[in-house]
Image 1 (cartoon, rainbow, N blue to C red):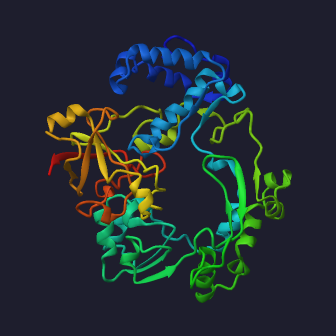
Image 2: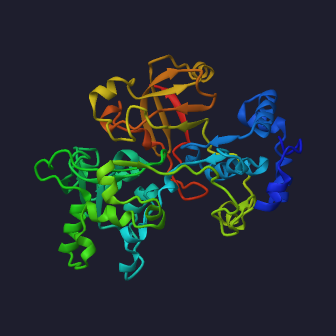
Image 3: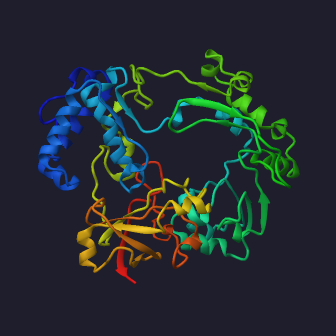
Length: 440
């Protein structure tokens, strides 16, 4: 809207961006009336937001996590990330936008991953498509080693994933702390340590503190951390390189072997003494170049044409062929499926439920706390209904991720989520699943 009112930073755009003229032409299609219908915000609300964002200095956008989990999430995130360039907020201290802090820590991944040891390119499978991969008879997976994950709960299209794990000819090894839903399908379960029982280097998606923690207790029973198991497997397979004998301290030391950490005197020895170190704040994240091939902020990107048929961040309407779109955000008491087995945490949260708008509840004759079945072509999930104005008409919200046995019909919410890939990045689209609903 500030484009229509010519409230944009021409000087910044001309010096630091590419493709703005085409983007500006595209923006003419997004009139206040059009955007109001798409967002259910009034034209007055949109106008107020646009004026405040364009005129208050500095302006900052916290994009957050979740938006990318839509079929059109990549393009939508791209469009939002361009707003600071339009008004030139990158010029101001604490201005701009942030998706996540994961790139804040310049870990030396080359030393950790050792790509120089590869003698050929290994087969790579997107975990979003795990169910498809495990049931692919033409290119069968013969064994799977699961660690740091519980795919029978967290992976989309649960029934297809389950079908893959049920194969008699699939050799399954699960390295796990608990008797998880995935561990039940294992041929071998290897006991894993908790964070109390092993050393580790810690970074974050959100803050700017790096830390190293020593073990608090010795590993219980035969429990072993990932690093030790990987080392044992490598040596059993005949790999003789010294790197396969590295322990957590060795790997942490290598991870910190970068120019940034050296310049700021951040080392493993210092972390062992101080426990944690706060990385310096970056007052001006964008100065005169962007992390793109053009080194400029891109309003247009020709490479995007191969993804969606357009090189501009257009808003593409979702076509799901169902009356409802299902959103399944994380439960605040769990960490994905981690901690979902703890009764005290489950007691803080209502039993697995689905929120539905009052108008939709009347239309489908649903009452608070009644059992409802949400379903699509992949399967069904029975939940308790919670009628709430928190959700829009045509939207259902069911928080996860409970373990399978906590659901009435033993079908978790990811039974319904699509294993399609997002438009940019090939990520999961947990929030773009079409479903229907009925009273049970």
